[in-house]
Image (tube, rainbow, N blue to C red; front, side):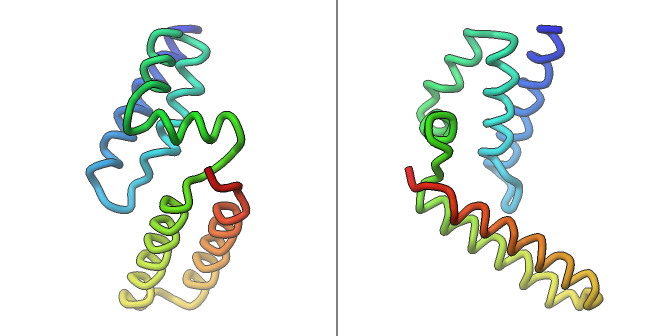
Length: 117
């Protein structure tokens, strides 16, 4: 079972690194999942991820208090607005826009109700 957890952790790190390069692909959620998987499989990889200068602080903030950095909240809000704006420009059907708008609003509510780190 440890190999499965470790494999999933490595996959999430890979997806997170791809997200660090590609716009609008999330990075931190994949790194949070990787930390979860590594905590169950590899103490060394878990410690490496938590001490990583780029990803570690966000993971520790989330694990200790469920907090999100205010700058990250603003970037997420702008990204969500850009995605919805792109959907408007592409002329998606009103039903699709309504569903997308409702889901994105719920995501924003979740993000902005988390404590600041």
